[in-house]
Image (cartoon, rainbow, N blue to C red):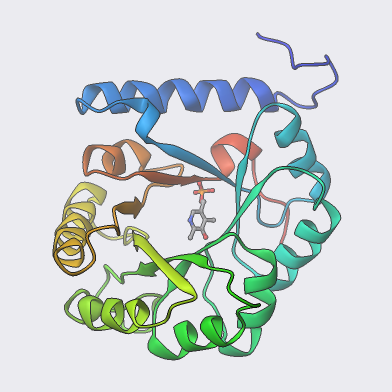
Length: 235
Ligand SMILES: *Cc1c(COP(=O)(O)O)cnc(C)c1O
C-alpha cells in the first residue's frame, strides 16, 4: 500500500482515494474518454473538518457538502486551504446567502426562486458557478427540475448576471438502471447546451454508479463513501 505524504494519514484514506482514481481512469478509458476531463469531487458530508484537512493533505482540491450549516462551518474553519467547495444539497431560499458566501459552485439550482435568492446575495460583481439540478425520478418531491422544465429554468438563470451556468446535475433514481437514467440526463444536457453553449458540465455519478455516469458523459463526479469510508451518523 502506498503510504501517505507524511506517513501520518489515517485509516487508509490515501489508498482508497488512489483506488477510486484508478477506477475512474479505467472507466474513462473504457468509454473512450480522457480521464483528465473529469473532476472528482469528494463528498465529505457528516464527516468532520479534520477529514477534509486530511484529504487536502493528500491532494484533494474539490469537496462537496449537502447542508448549508455544515458547509459554512467547515469552509470557515478551512478557509486557508485552497479548496473548491461544491454545494450539492437541496437549497432553501432563506439559506441562499449563506450558501453563496461559502460555496464556489452550487450544483442544485432547481427552481427560479432559489436562483433569484442566490443572485440577490451576490457581493459586488462576483460571479457564482451554478448547475441546474434535474429530477430523473417520477417523484416531484425529489430535488431537481423536471426534464421538460429544465430549459425554462436555464433561461431564468441565464438572465441573472451574477450566476454563471456551467451545466446540469442529477442523482440517479434508486429503482432504475443508472445507465438509462444518465442517458436521459445526457439528453437534457444536449438540449440545455442548445440554449447555453457554455453549460458543458454534467455532474453525475456517486460511489455506486460513477462508471455508468462516465460512460454517459459526466464531467464532475461526486464520490463520498468509497473514499471517506462510511458516514458517521448525521449530527
Ligand atoms: C451523499 C451524496 C453523494 C455521494 O454519495 P456516495 O454514495 O457516498 O458516493 C453524491 N451526490 C449527492 C447529491 C449526495 O448527497
